[in-house]
Amino acid sequence: MRSRDVIAAACALVLSALLALPAVATPACEPDKLATKYPKLVGKTIKIGQDGESRPFSFRDPKDFNHLIGLDADVARAVFACAGVPIEFSTGSWSGLIPAAMSVQIDVMWDTLLYTPERAKKLDFVAYMNSATGFMVAKGNPKKIKSLDDLCGFTATANLGTTQEAMLREASAKCTAAGKKPVDVITSTDMPSGTRLVQNARADALATNKFYGDALAETNKEVEMAFGVVTNARIASGTAKGNDDLVKLMFDGITVLRANGELKKIYDTYKVDYSLVTDPEILTK
Image (cartoon, rainbow, N blue to C red; front, side, top):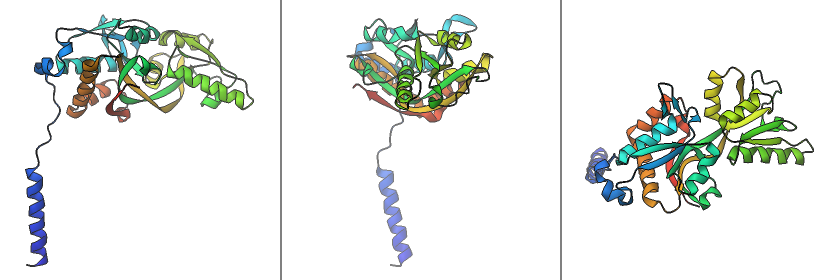
């Protein structure tokens, strides 16, 4: 047999073997299988906590002030609709949503929540996106703040209990170690109050979610974004320990939305960088 005939025969065998492999099923929404897949959620309405003040993630619809829209709001709706589980939103200050989820006053916090090992002592997470922190300053950047090193000797603010607060305190420690003045870190309860501190010159910079900062700077002419830092922190939804069906539903839902392209459509709608999205991961420790 000639060599090219041998090669052709080998290719035919490989092709036959590949065709014989079972087809990989594309993930799909299955609301009719709720009782089978997530039996503990049958008959329940899931209460999702958001602050409604974190554009582009969660904010009030200008056409209906009682209706929340945004990246996190729309993704949450799509994920739970995919499984056939009704939801309702519960609004409150961002810093109060984490303890509310831990104490089961709400079922899920889904509002630019970052996974940390400390939080995972009381919450289980479904992470699906890498985080980016932005630093907002007064218009014109009068203090010429262009990096974390430039914060030494200045006043900076972040929401209480956030990874941004931890970032500022770490930066302050580095300033001190380098023989420079520390960062004067003050905390705020929510995004609007932190923004007001910058506007009123009580803080020189606000550390916040970069995409929130970008969106605000487009409409608020008193502030601008000085710089951004892509971090290893993971954005996630979070629920109290013991809600295994709820965790599985969120993991499955994000997987389906990634596969069918709906997740990217939502990201594109709110102009959030889809390249930061990752495969969903359940984090419990």
